[in-house]
Length: 600
Image (cartoon, rainbow, N blue to C red; front, side):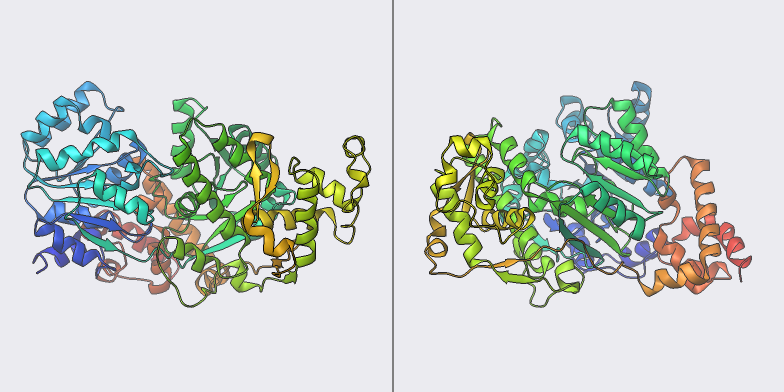
């Protein structure tokens, strides 16, 4: 049975009328003393699953969080709701740490956020032993996985919680975990008896779009200018150098862009991240060092200028878009050179052979997502073990039918070129042979005398790149990184090479023709209510600046949209808006009602 005060607390503190998805069942399970593993997509309300029980149960809830920025952001948001929350991390002075610890010992804190490395120290273990603890929440639990893209060694020590506090319920939460990672979380955190709550991984408001890389900067510029000229967004690049160059280039194009990567000083990274959270219309250009735990809800797009190394990484990074549930874009441009670069990085790493094989398999799955002619969302969800029968209607392959062609003959010619050139050369060289280019290297090797020399002149260099890329994506051809990306034939290519099996390939478009994403709500806003929208955002920004908190912590965009749609004229009506609890009504109700009244 659900705790009798649960719904009342949901409404009065958090400002929501009803639970979503598995939230109610999870909260009930935790309040009854059970352990839980929660898999829930970004923006589906994971944090409520431990924040609300911590208010209902006697004692303090301890939240293990991997990033300082995430702790500070969540604690600021909880303070806005009138919840006594605090964090312990390296940003605090000794005096601040002592003040927080004294408040804990007096029972004055409902939720404490703490980093995993601090949690396992002797002093912290002593401190916890003095407290009445109602639950442990292990956020971003996928960080425990050796095979994951966000591995944190300190997470491996968190099994100590089951030994030291066997009667305290534990809840592990993540938005990204395939079946292998789920098993790792259970085993490494000693959650064998935990009840699993697995929600759909689908983020229906995100539109997935993947295009072939052709002058990727210009493609990115066109995408941002036409669809997100004034929006906040994230652009991911593979290298630090590319991050800095892309940032400078976007600034030259008139955008407010900041960079973020591990090579920057800690102070500069913190400054750029803080500015991104505090302001609208900023683009952050980053390596994968940026993003985990970023709660900014109105990121309208995530763009990748390079191929992510796995579907898990792609899902995690694109999931930072549209956390408010409003339309958002996930845009990716990739080419064959990306594949070669990622394979070179993996080949030169110190990982053991088993790890390399797993990472290669993950890269192959990512390639398959890029080259599919079917619904991308179906393939994406299937990767996480979730079957979807119908196409989504909100990805590029659904919105614009993918043109295909019978590439059987071209595939045979490409495979023959690889074989007859001794399986020792890369794509550029092989294309030159197929096109009949008589450069010095080809003549020295005698490959101008081969029967396959010049037989591919019906296709352009661009088309041949697509053919080789798809052969690699389908596993018919393998890149040999010990030979700098030379192509080798896989045994599975034999039926195609012998003409026993046809091969249908996707036909790459020169440019994306997908319709610009707009919803009726956003269009109506732009046409009729833009002045009120800007006035509400100005008020929100003023209030946020007074407190040095991000604007979305005051109210997110979804709440502002409801203000425009419902035009509340009284405190009672304002209290019925999504995300308006008792404290926010008291703090900000009159301020926003006054703005609305000016336009009513």
